[in-house]
Amino acid sequence: MKALRVMRTFVSGSTTGIPPVAMAPPLPDFLGLGTQKGGTTTLHWLLTQHQQVHLPDCKEVQYFTQNYDQGEVWYREHFRGASPQQRCGEITPFYLFHPEAPSRIHTLLPQAKLIVLLRDPVERAISQYFHSRKRGFEPLELGDAIAAEPSRLASRDPFSQQKHSYVSRSRYLEQLNRYEDLFHCDQLLILRSEDLFEQMEWIWPRLLDFIGLEPKPVPALVPHANAGSGDTHSVDPALRDRLQDQLRSTVAGVRSRYGIEWSWS
Image 1 (cartoon, one colour):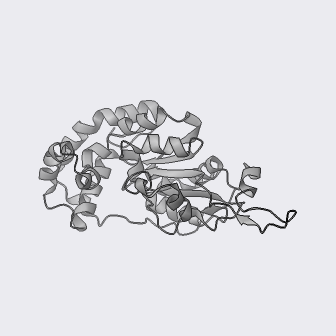
Image 2 (image 1 turned 60 degrees about the vertical axis):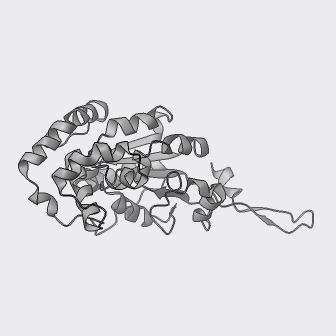
Image 3 (image 1 turned 90 degrees about the horizontal axis):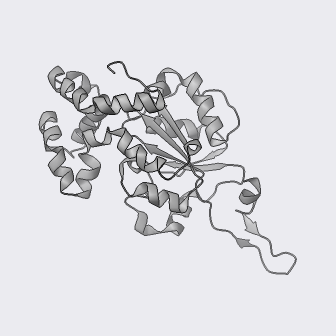
């Protein structure tokens, strides 16, 4: 890996009298796949605090989803300026849900390390709803939006696929299966989102070791970035119970496969 990274910079032509030729910018070593409303903004902030990490200026590059037709050259430009000693990465939570992202990622980055944060699926779905509502993407009330989701997604409208996929995005096993079919288990780090805030002293060393970074103390004053406004507490308990019923098999599967649990499971 180190030898490859040294070659990122220049191919020297000094012995032939040819001026040095700049190599293409690198490709990422790791990706944050999601989940949306699962702490990925905080994860992005945390990784920017480590001097061995190079992240693009924008958090969500969306190359393997909305910007795939831009091509590899366009994607590499997001990592221009990385030093040979740095690990490059990017975090786009739509990658976990988008059905074509796993194969696209595997084609270009077959050795990439993949990080997934899994939040309580009911709380995640509700939080995504209020996120969409706040930004003007959702005109319906929560119960109606949940009821309309199957028909919205069946239409294959790209906007609904991203903005109205509340329960579907919380069905984690279906999404993770697509990645586990392509990548070795050692390339996937599955973490409980809540632990990112509640057990940082345990999560941080695991994260650094997984990416291949030097140990470093936990950054001070870790923000709960892009947090919701607290509207989730106003949700009708009966509706919350219905969501738990819909997602109970997901919770059982996540507990069995990854040992991750939530209070109601």
